Image (cartoon, rainbow over all chains, first blue to last red; front, side):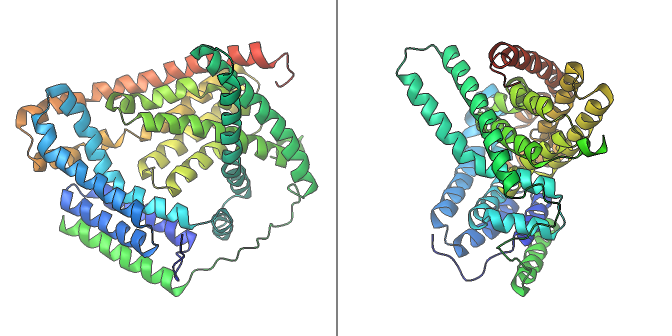
Length: 223
Length: 197
């Protein structure tokens, strides 16, 4: 993915996600939600995530069309159950698009460095970095277990049981190995942790935050 | 004694890894929430199937803060990817605090205490469908704008009645207890002999 010149600071991104949440749940009109999605789409396009932006926009349009034209013609139970979900989807899409682009353009190092800057507890930051780094290992473990189980004629319950046993056993083994490695590298060292990545709030971050907050405020006021 | 209460590197690694497992199961049910009924029942279903990673954390890290860190990591990942609302942040915070208090009061090694704390923790996910009831007016205003007939809105009003919310609230602790017993049985049967517990 080609990087744009301006990169939103992780703290600014988290702040905007927070404000966007409030904005989304304080408006109810399709137009207002569409305008909020448009702002997230501008961010997506600026960061060159064209495909993702188009997909989110298409889901929004499909949800609006389903709300207006398909649901009123559906039988009662189906219409009722899907209406709630579709409205919720409309509300969550602007946040989800912003969050998607933010997560894709923010590295784990930048996120942890930013969380350190806002004096987030070190224990949560360490736990978060371990969790995020463990997902690929978990995926790998799953594929290995799945391939091994394919060779045997196992029932669904046996497969689930096998998956649980291998996942927990490997997790326990990994905890031991990682703990030893992390202790050697100084995880328990009480000295303040440093980071290779330097983060700082730029004028651009402040400008984007101010313009976005103003935009969200105007939408909430108008609709 | 004071020294043992502190969370060390190994504790944080344990929390981090089991939270990753918890998160994967949680996320699977979030995706299953595309089916409307599943979405309403999602907090209870997650409680039913996430007992193992939760109890593993409780067993391995018998210290204050473990569950709070677990909840904070889950919320942070969901929040940074834009899949969580502020409502769920609040419910998770309340759930984690109550879970921590329960563990502290009833004892970190107590199964009853851990089960009860799991029930409180599971309430955190209630924040996902809760906006339907919290922002009911906004939802119905939206539906009316879409042009739905009044009969339809009346039926929908019944579907999102406080009784449905009450049912979900009752179902969460029931599923949490079942999930904890299920987890205990599996852990005892499969892992105690292997020396993992």
